[in-house]
Every structure is written in C-alpha cells, then in structure tokens.
Image 1 (cartoon, one colour):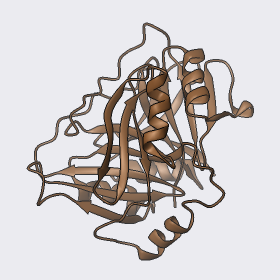
Image 2: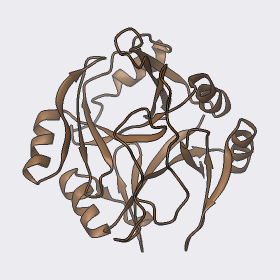
Image 3: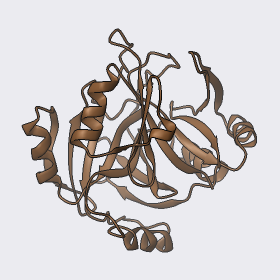
Image 4: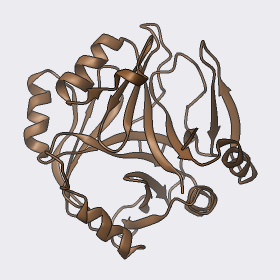
Length: 277
C-alpha cells in the first residue's frame, strides 16, 4: 500500500514561508532533509516540503471553484478551529472561510499562506456516511488524540476529479490505497458532489467528484510553480509503481530544474512523486 509522505508547496520567499509554517502553524524543521532552496517541516505523520521558487514565480492558476480539477487544498487537523484561526487572524493571515460546522460532524475553516495556497483547519472525528471500511475508521478514531497535543498536523490533501471510478481504479486498485468512506451531497447540492476519503497511511487523499461538469486543472511541471506542486507517495518499488500507474492511465513526467524530479500525473493532475519505502 502506498503511504503519503509529504506535500510539496512552492513558495516565493523561504524565510517568510518558514515564519508562517513554523512560527504560526508550529511545524518543526527537519534539518536532515532541508537545505538550499528546500525546507522540510515535520507535520505529524508526514512532512511539508517548502521549495523556494522566487518572487517572479509562476502562479499556480488555482481557482476557488471546486469544479476545477486537480489540487484543491492542504488540510490540517487541530484541536480547536476558532482559537487556532484567531491566532492567524491576529497575524494578518487572509481568512477565506470563517469557522463553521460542516457535514460529517467536523468544524472547519479555510485560509491562505503568504503565496495564496489554500489551507484548511479541521477539528473533530469525521463521521463518514456511508462507511466503506469500519476497521479503518475505528483505527482512525483510536489515533485521533494518541500522543497529540492539538497543534496543527498533516491531515489530508484534497483534489477534484472528473470520474470517481477512474480515480478509484488508479489509487485504490493500482496503489492499494483503501477507502475509509464518503460524504454524499448529491441530494443536497445542485452540483451533486461526493467526497471520498482514501487513507494513505495516517493521512488522507480527499477526493471531490461531481455530477456537474468539471474544468481542467492548470497544473504544469514548471520548476518555478507556486502552490501545491505534488504529493509524495512512499512505495516499495518506485519504478514498478510508476509503470503500473502509467498503465492505468497516468503520465510519467519530469519537472526540470537543478534537481530534476520524476513524477506521475493522473488524468486530473493529481501529481505524485514516488518515494522508495
């Protein structure tokens, strides 16, 4: 089974990003894996990899419309959304959605990092409806407060896809990432959307799919791209996993730069760097 190891985010100023993700969110630098234009920060079960791409960097092209395919946001679990968001507001962080009680019994809020990357706080144990794997859900519930002090930690990366069955064939069937459950909004939202939660280790890929038409995502393998650039998936054999994903419809590509990175993109521009376990 593939495990999500990190999310990579392009930033224009590494010092400013370190102050935000470290000073405000409380992530700790992983010095052994940081250096040069890259800062790796421990965020619970996975890491946040910040890559400085310069002040003249290419904007991500992200749109606030969830119907745009590809990366949507990076979500962090916290103990108290309102209190944590108040600290960010006092520091001048832009708030995009004020705290509210959402479907599934969780409280959420959205805000932006200094370069506009869309971020979420979520508090509480999500109540899936329907549940696909009771055993995995019970395991997730047991680990909610296990040794955790309530500070922000890596919870999920959200994406929008055009075809849920295709996405499940790619991530569940090819990479072995199991489904926890869903939240079905088809009866209450005119866009007819479903959120499907795939558990990639101790973190989650949150997959949005819609009855309404979706729009192509703007992601490209530019070395100076801002925002969410890729997720890391730890697998036993990266070459074999890359071959399996391309056979399942993915596209192998290389992001150029001083340190070229081998990536695989699915049809919706969920871009993965395959890392050897």
